[in-house]
Length: 274
Image 1 (tube, rainbow, N blue to C red):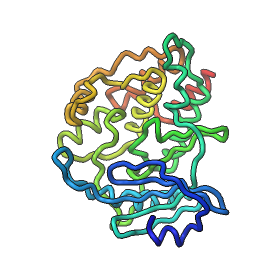
Image 2: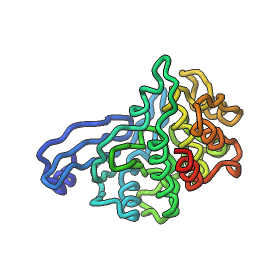
Image 3: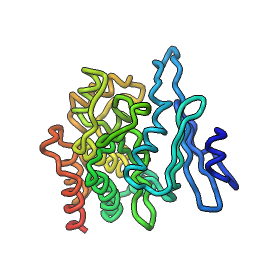
Image 4: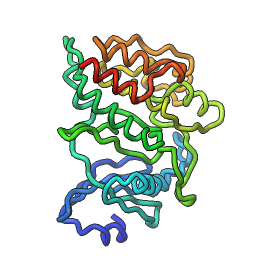
């Protein structure tokens, strides 16, 4: 861990939570509480991957966004390989983990509408600030008794970003991309995150968490280009989630952004259906 981070946090304990291409995430214990520490570094080109410099900037970019949104005690800076940020740790279960019982063989109950509402409220709260998240997925919806925390805002769009940390949006985890985002990335290499695309991604997240199925069918070993083309070509899988939630997910997965409910409307529908 960089010296600049260790000087900011007086850690009594730490554990590596995630080590993926371009970043590591640590849970750090201090006398003031628990924090998440994110370190970014560039991805070098290999026979399977193109070089990606933006991953080094992502923690700094997220730190700047979190400070604008007043998300608690947040700091960020640079280290020899890229950028870092420190932010409050969010304890809880991801949406996908929490809904595991609904994916079990023979399960037929409708997932908890209160939990779905909590996720929608977290998205709507961000949208109310004028920001689109750009990377909504089940792992970024952390649910606890206090509500849902919407994490990983490095790709968010909606306000000023320090030029030194900014980079173009190249899509997100493809399983949750909307058709218009996938189409733009295929045609131009980049896209613009939108609130309508967030609603689509939330619908895809609710769907896969309830059923275990991606919203669009494609082979597990399909390239990202082929995955995106499948999303553009459609249609999405039949939504077989029972009750109010199933009808709502179907509307959220509309291929036309104008036909999707807003995040506030999703909240209203879930509230009335409880």
